[in-house]
Amino acid sequence: MQDNTSTPVSLYSQCIRQSKQIAIEITGILPDSKPRIHQIEDTAFFHTLSAISCDNNVAQFTASLSASVLYTGVSTWGGEEAMNTASFDMEKSLHETVEYEGEEKDVRLISLDLAMDSIECTALTPRKISVKAYATVNAVFAPITSYNVISHVGDNVCTLDTALNITQPVASFKTQTFVKEDIALPQGVGSLRRILRKRILPVSQSVKTEGSRGIIYSAAEIHVVYERDEEPATVSAFKVSVDYNHAIELPLDEDRLTTADISITQDVGDIYAEVKEGGILSVEFVVGYDTKIYEAQHHSFPCDAFSLTGEDTVTCNSISPAEIFTVCNPIGACSEKLYPKEGTLGQILDCEVKPLYVTGTPHQGGITVEGVYSVKAIYTLKDNPLCIGAVSSEIPFSYFCECKCGSVLNTGIDVSSICAEASQFGDVSVKWSVCVRALCQSVINTGYISDITPCNDTPVRERCIYCYNKSKDEGLWDVAKKFKVSPSDICSINSKSSEEIDKSELRLIIIKSV
Image 1 (cartoon, rainbow, N blue to C red):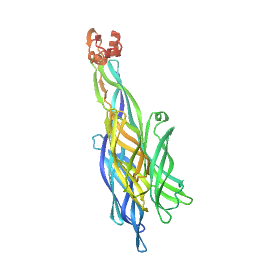
Image 2: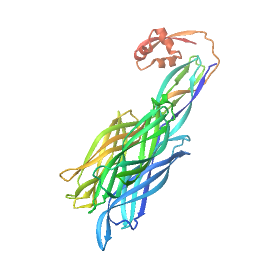
Image 3: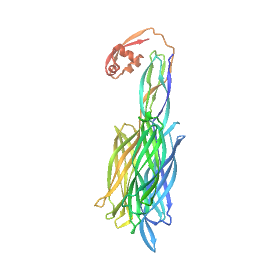
Image 4: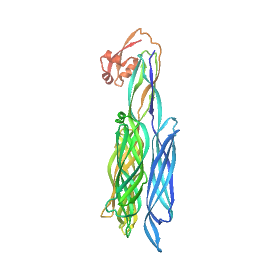
């Protein structure tokens, strides 16, 4: 009787990305303390994701949305109208679901993100604002397939072993941290009458592991547009740097963490900021971290087999697990020139670069990531420093990233270190740094032994000798399987190594028991 041992193996199968288009609308009524709307100049839209879960093959999440609108307002004082820059902030919470449409029952959510496609701000009345945004929810699901693999067989069965080295996600979780910092204002800022807009832009991030803990070190820039407390009043801007860190517990021991790939992305929404006495800017904000851990797994098991006696029944099946991996490719610096209306450019207040419609396409040796940058600059008007203007442009981009070939599940563009400067010719040069992120998969096809039906051993009575002309297209395993003999016996009888037999066209002596 054969002595067979089976081992259960669970692997991710080919992942599926499902997208859902959603429309978002936030409306707000300006209080009487705000000037009425003359013209909307710029809208900044922020979002953070939380409460992400996947139950019964349905992904659920909550998004905290906020819109910051800068507009030229009209105020009436003593019967006279005056224009100045004003701001209005609105918030909304959104709950959405994405349902997995496949037939598999055991499914894991690998990633979920919300990408803004377009934002439109409209003044419905002089005191009512509507912000409409169109977004795409991308959810990547991975079905889990379990296999009962025959890992050890008896002496009457000859096996061909395979080594399956594959990278798959082993952990995914979200955490948050609250940051509160007091920062000294830069020199020359002066007194602030009111803050018109504040936003935070991550600059850098690094992860250091200490045992089973991870420390995330982050640096960011806070951009502030404000109105000076002086007469005549003017609009100005400044930026300050802030460092913060966050500790997370990692569900792997120290040895496994040395070879694991830890991928962390962070979301920072709107922030609270106020100026205290002594020229101190006090800021508060919440940072959300999306942590994913990928680990190289090694599985070794027989992928093909045959019975030497011809009496045992061997059942072999195919297996197609997906290797899931991330690509992170720093691109470097980019730039674009914007051209405000001639003679209007005063001081540059803020600039923004947002990637739109980002897609990834696999090619031989890598992937191509394409999309459109929305580049925008906000500035004071030269003849009226209390009012602002805005200029924007959309430019296409295309980057090639060298990596393993496979299909692209999701792509993203991280933009950092954004700055702008005006030239003597009245144009604005915007510069920024880019890093491409991609979630990819590569399907591996191999086989495994799912069952061996043994029978009683048959006594050997005769031995036959064959002379076989092997072609170059045949391998040692092919010949051994055809004659139901051990590959090692063929090598020993013919005094050849397995490599010599695989690569040569030669005559082989085959001795077979019958």
